[in-house]
Length: 138
Image 1 (cartoon, rainbow, N blue to C red):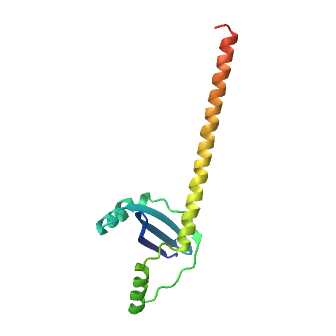
Image 2: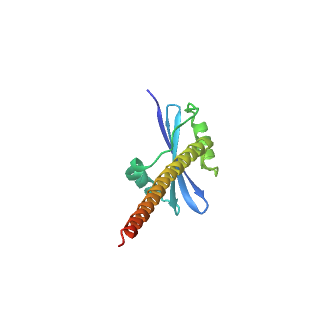
Image 3: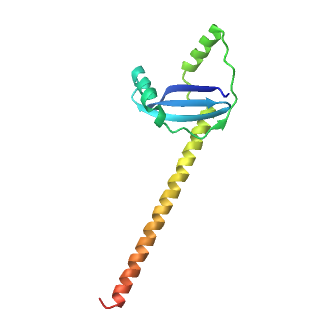
C-alpha cells in the first residue's frame, strides 16, 4: 500500500504570501500553489485546509525519491529549524508547478483557438448571407 504524505510550506513571495501544498503518494509528487495576499494567520491556514483543500488543483505528478523520516528528536528539531529558514519551495515542487502551468497554457490555447475559429466562421456566414441578399435585389 502506498504511503501518502502531505506538506504545506508558507513563505513570502514578494509582494504576497504564498503556500505550496506538496502531496506525495508512493514515489509520485504533485504540488499546488496558493496565494494568500497578506500574511495568513494560523486559523486562516486551518480554514483553507479544512474547507478548500478538495477544490485545489494539483499539478501532474512527477517521480521523486522518498526519504525515510528518522525518529531522533534532535534531528527532527534540526530539520524543523532548517525548514523554517527562508528557502522557498523545493525543486521537485517547482517542476510539478511548472508542469501544471504548461498544461493550463495549452488548455487556454486550444480554447481560444476554437473560439477564434467559431468567430471567423460566423463572420464568413454573415458575409455570405449579405451577398445573397444583395444578389436577390433586396
